[in-house]
Length: 102
Image: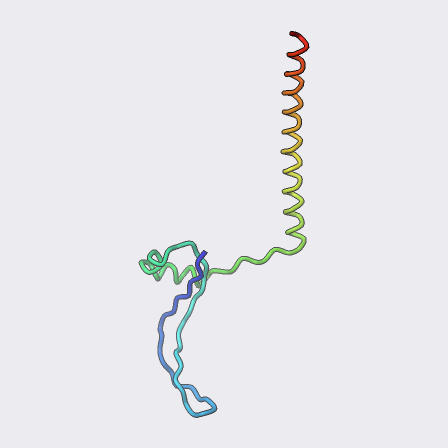
């Protein structure tokens, strides 16, 4: 995932400071994260500017959401393990049953 900053309407402006007046760059800026390549962005700056204007970072998950996800994954793993054990039990029964009839 790449972090992208696009700036436009860049100008220099004088700003007061403690030691007199200095120059500062002033511009409009957007930021976003994307899987697009630098070339793709450069080829269509206007479209990516629009993406940057409306982009919002993903909200970090709460502790409760993380716990719920882990519980769901744990339950899925248990179900998969139960199915695997059932399949192995049926195979063992077939093998053992086949040996007894010989």
